[in-house]
Length: 189
Image 1: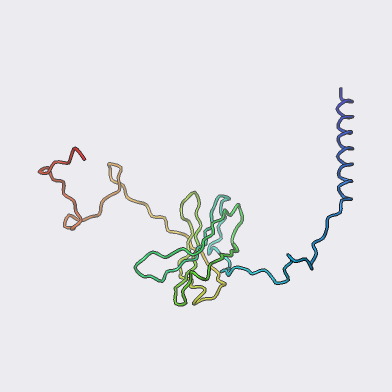
Image 2: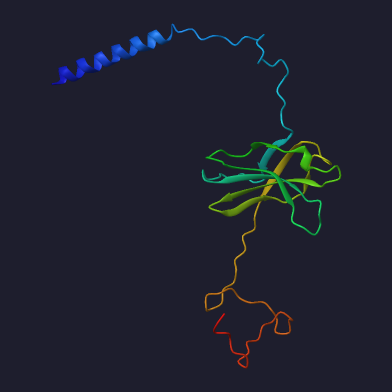
């Protein structure tokens, strides 16, 4: 029985090696540089911001850590910043430093805009490292920047005996809500 398996395995190996040898003889035509479709100009590369992300402390990141680098427009003081470009990647066991390249659309950036670069690392959807300094780029800082991440301070939330979060609204606050039994709650919509 073993002889049958060995002979059939040998036959398959010979057939595959014969096919592999034949494919080496097939000629593939080289592209003609003088053809009408050939381009002699270098390809245009989209503008980008690049750099390196460092972690201030020597820490071993788990394989499921996620690094997110964000390019945002923080020009409006009374509005949230607008994300222009963002890249999130799993570290897959790699450790700091991390290189990044964030492409951006120059049409989205006004000459006087305040463009900022930031980064963060999350583990199990919990923020563990962030940039703690403002890093202006493009209009005020060029297109190369290095970022340093610092650990996020973990704060425990005090709990009441009932299991909910403790309220800190003083009784004199205008936002204090006092239930009223004089006005019944609506029963129909």
